[in-house]
Image: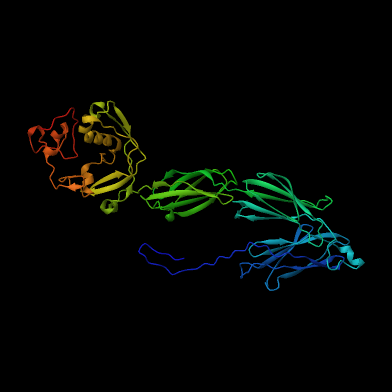
Amino acid sequence: FQAIDKAGNKSGISNITVQKDSTNPSDFSLNIINDSTTSFTINTGTTDDTTYTTDVSGMNYYEIYLDGNLAQTIEVTDQSTPSISYKAENLSENTTYTVYVIAYDKAGNSRRSANMTVSTADVNQGGNTGGQEPSSQLLAPYISLSGSTQTNGYYTGNVIVTIEDSASVSTTKAVKVKYSVIGATEIEETEVMGRTAMFTISQDGSSTITAWVEDSEGNKSETSTQTILKDTKTPTNVSLTVTSYDETSISVNASGADEGSGIISYAFQISTTENDDDFTTTETVASTEGTCSYAYTNLETGTRYYLRVIIADRAGNKTPSTITMQITDDNGLTDEILGNDTSKYVDYMPTVKSVTSPATYNGSGNDLNFSTDTTLKWKIFKVEDNILTLISDTTANTGFTLSGYNGYNNGVYLLNEACKAMYSNSDVGAVGRSLNADDIEKVSSFDKTKYSMYGVSYGKEVLPADRYYPEIFAYEVNGAPNGTYGTELNQSEQIKPAIGYRERK
């Protein structure tokens, strides 16, 4: 792989070799030598059939079990001779022990030997040299599993179950394998002729397998059991809500649910853009609860942040929340902000008021009531003549109906009056008004003295005679209010409402 930036510059090429080993070590047997009435020695060894490199595969260690208890773990230090020898000492005289060994390769695959019984009393009668198994036997079978990645004991995909007779070919009496499954996956007692059976667990949840072998006369071995936990479902109803914020921190509450293995962690992420690649995890909180509170700290003042949480369940399934945006408070209108930073967000709260738009002027036929939207965030729009103009980062959450010629005539007036009532703050001398054409022209290249039709510019100045304005035109630029030029209003100005309309002459 290599990295390429947007300018086309390339890094060097790097290579990574990935090695995979899903093969169990080879079958093996035990050679047991009685040393005394209180000890015996186990000699054994096997190989890993997979081609290996150091620290990737090859034999890793052996576990020796006496009567089902782990007696010793022995590491393999030389791959060329991966055999071991273990002396079991301080045993009881005239006592029979059950012995087996599990061999592990470096990839975690394992192979278990057949069980052997060893009696410390046999040494008085010539010993149990060679550790020979009984001439024929029925042993509890192996149950081995393979499938998708396992996390915290849970599989996230189908699991292939293999049941194998654990006795050696020369000593086994088994002619059939039997098994049943209860739980999330239900399989009634099933018989498979031979020494091996295979099937698949496909249902989410907990499934318990019980298996045994039988001889031709119907005699049964002891049973082996194995419980499989499976969860393929991701967490649901994942959300992230801002509960409070100040100049340098944002507190949030995350919530979610998981029907399978259960929630295990909340990874809280933050970014200054909405780009997925820009999010970084600030902390992963271990929790099994359906809600989790967290605070992002050491943030920049007056800065827009994008937040999300990724909830993981015990099986490793993950679900991200939708992105939540929050702007930290600013610590005041400093000289730096007033001087040059017209992208800064500031801490501004209008005096909470409501306003009524009268039906007489709005043309809708109804008086319309509106109240302050306190969720708006305010950004510096311009600094001019020591006057700071703020603009909200989104539109208000209510509509404003203007209809007919009265609505047209009074749009500027009604919108300004509404904004003045809802977004002014007398404590800081701030007056609210609507965004207008003058504001737009200051940040655009539109030339109001020209017009075009069907994409063709005619380069013609728009004269008063070309305007189809009704009554309000009498007060506007070039409208000569009351027939007198020089008292006209600016294009975005209206100091009183108008009723009715006047035909263009």
